[in-house]
Amino acid sequence: MSIVLVVNSGSSSLKYQLVDVAAGAALATGLVERIGHDDGRATHAVRGPAAGAGGAGEGEVREDLAVRDHDAAFDWMLRAFAEHGPSLEDHAPVAVGHRVVQGGARFFEPTVITELVKINIDELSVLAPLHNPANLAGIVSAERAFPGVPHVAVFDTAFHQTMPPAAYTYAIDREVAERHRVRRYGFHGTSHRYVSRAAAGFLGRPVEELKLIVLHLGNGASACAVDGGRSVETSMGMTPLEGLVMGTRSGDVDPAVLLHLQRRAGLDVDGVDDLLNKRSGILGLGGHGDMRDLVGAAEAGDARAELALDVYAHRIRSYVGAYAAQLGRVDAIVFTAGVGENAAEVRRRSLAGLEGFGIELDDARNAERRGGARRISSDDSRTDVLVVPTNEELEIARQTLEVVAG
Image (cartoon, rainbow, N blue to C red; front, side):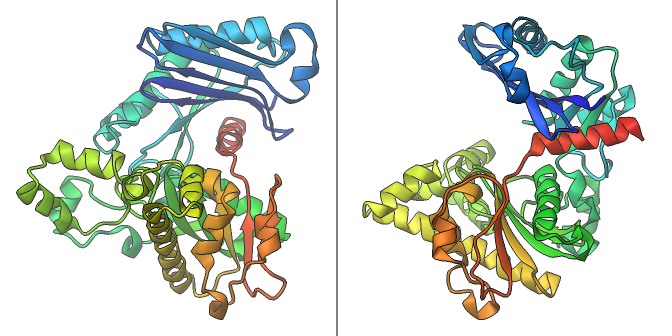
C-alpha cells in the first residue's frame, strides 16, 4: 500500500517513476520525449529488486516512435509496464502524484486534484505559461489512464509559502503588484524540502533545530534559507529567472538593462525573454551550457570559461552571505542537484575565502566522488558543509501518500 506513480509532465515530454515509498526506492523509471513530433523517443527501465525478477522484468527498453499527445504517451507507458514490468497488477499504485510548477499563493501544500483544483492550475498558467498548461495536460491524461485512484498535485512553490512578507514582496506599486500577482514565489521547493530533511537526518538532529542554506545547483539553480524546516528566503522570484547564474538563464540583472536593450538594441519583449532565459548564464558567458564542459574549458586556459566560473561562484557566495545574515547563524550549507552533487571545483570556488566566517572545506573530502550524503567541510569548520543528493520524485511520492493516507 505504499506504491505511488510520480508524473512530471512537460510540454513535449513525460517523465515518470513508480516509487515504493516504504522502501524509499523507484521500481521503474521512464521518459517519453518529443511528444507531438514524428521523431519521438521513449525509455522504460526497471529498477531495484524488480529488475531481478527475470524475463520481462529486466533491464531497459528504448523505442523510437511518433507520440501524438500526452494520452498516447501514457498509453506507451502502460504498455511498457505490461510488457517489461513491473506489473501494475502486482504493484498497483495507490495514488498518482503530479509535479505542478506554479501554485501561486493559493496552494500551500500537496492537494488532491478536483475539477476546481484543475481550474486553479489553469488560471495560474499566466504565471507559468511554459509549465502549468503542460502539467495540466499530464493530469488529464493520467486521470484517463488511472481513473480509480486519487491524483495529487505537489507544487514547486508550496514550500516557499512560509516566507515572511518582507521576503516575498517586491518594492513596486502595491496596487499594480496585487492586480497582477507580482511577488516572489520561489521554485525547486520539493527539492529544498527533501534535502533539508535529509541533511538533518545525516547530522542526526531534528530539522526543527537547524538553520540551513540549501544550494540546488543544476541547469536551473536556486538558493534557499531554511529555518527550522521552513523556507524563509529563496533566490528564484516570480519566475525561475531571478537569482543565481544558471545554465542558460542570467539570474539577477538590473531591470534597467531590459529597458536599455529594448531601446538601444532593438529587442522586443520576446527577444529579451529569449536572451535572458536561453542565451545567458554560463552558456552566454563561457560558451558552454554544461558545467562539465565549462570546467574543462577553464582548466584548458579558456579565459571566457574562467570568467563564467568566477561569476557563477561569486553569485553563490553573495547569496550565502546574505542568507547567513537573515538566519543569524548557519548550521550547515548543503549542495545538491547535478552540479552541486558532482562539481567539486564549483563547490570549492563558491565557498573560497569564507574561512573567517567559520566555513572551511576539506580539499580531499570535496574531491572525493561517491554517492550518498557526505560531509566535505574540514574538522575545524564551525559550519558543516554537506553534499546531499536530491530525490524530488521520492519527495513527491511521500507527500502524495501522506495526503491520501491522512
